[in-house]
Image (tube, rainbow, N blue to C red; front, side, top):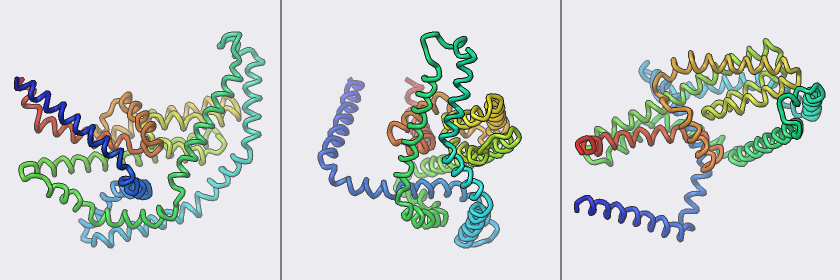
Length: 359
């Protein structure tokens, strides 16, 4: 009887939640300005959160060295301004030239790719691999067109997200400054609203979330930098065209867990194949070697056991994030999953574990 009463209470709670959601959908004009405001500040907020966890250890270190926290933040801003200026002067011209050259040579590159594939087809290589009634050249062309359409759509989506560049440019540094200066107070404020008997647990959960996010973001940046350096020097050794541009693309694409490495490898191999099949093979060897060094040496050393997420789970998360939020959803889905996992695990240990183990 007691179990039935609990079941009915649970059903009633679910029904009430659904009713609230339905009533909220009827008055969505009330929430539309809130959603519009959130969409405007989403990108600068994400950037601020990313750099907050990336720079907070450095700010804390400088503060321990008896440097005022505000001065420490301003000093880091000056250093980053110098790094950005060095990038504009030293790296951007080469990167810009490669982008312009790639765009200008795109028709010739596609023509060369078609010639390479046609030569393979004339040599009868495709006939030994594919059925006689299929045309692999046409199929591959269709796949490439679909891939470039997919890439174009995502680039357009990205440009639509950061279209209001002025808002991002002026709000991001201000938000980041105050997050670095007073970020620790936010967690204390959350804990202050909790009942007294849960304050210690709440503070522990927030510390665990902060530690997990810091480890994930800092680790991901370091791993991607190491991977980029390895790939760039490997591409230079094999003489791959547009080595710097392709490395930069791979660096940013690898922020997408698991799938980003595959997506960034496709244009690299295609560019190598256009030059020669041997270059394509060697470019693939460089990618695989760099990935092995990352996965077996650099990644475990940097992440340790902080990112204990199964690859299948990551694939599912990326697919769900893409479906719900596009490229923004892909970028934030793993950190959100980590936060939810920590909270759910602690709630289970606090309220349910002892009861269920005794049942």
